Amino acid sequence: MLKAQTQMLASVTSPEEAAIVLRAGVEIVDLKNPAAGALGALPYQLVEDVVQLVDGQAVVSATIGDLPMEAALIVAKTKAMLATGVDVVKIGFFGDAGHEACIQGLSELTKSGAKLIAVLLADSAIDLSLLNKLAAAGFYGVMLDTAQKNGQHLLSYCTLPELADFVSKAQSLGLRSGLAGSLSKAHVDVLLSIGPSYLGFRGALCDQSKRTATLNGDRVQELAEMLHRNEAKEVALRFVNQTSCALI
Image (cartoon, rainbow, N blue to C red):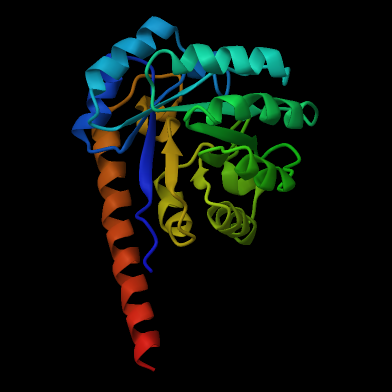
């Protein structure tokens, strides 16, 4: 069976930026405030405005902010963001304490059909045992990102085999797998080769490659075309390889 095509996630801060990524054919419109941290949250009304603008043309996800891992707080913020009408809510798992309590609290939301993605931070100690617990709690997906935006990127902290193991483990548990963290065009080919569910971008799409700057439409279009063109080649190659193996 062929793997699903890797999608593109683009983080936006406004309806105007959302319109730019929609025109480029981006599959996941991600709402995030880069000026407020790695996973900074945007105002609920702005999120609702983008949900109305997108109107089902793409998946809309949103972050809840860089928050301490206090279960009651995490659950409350997640509920509030779900109320905006987004399709998916992303929750950062910061630090090394409180994770299991938050997963348990959030499982009450997944039982009601909420699609939640846990964001693990590659520049911290990654506890891959959490993947089993996330899957058991009904999470929709898990992704790797970076907490520190300091000129480093995802592959500064993880080797390609480590990322491949993460993707493979997530997908074996039925979790969508995402990779982000100051990714650029230079990372597309190598990361497509391990087949994540999606790749996430912000800085690479902005003027001067600054994540707090305004989205640049030409950059968005160029990267979207590059990802989709190269992913089509990967899918075709996997098909040829699988067909050849079947004939042997």
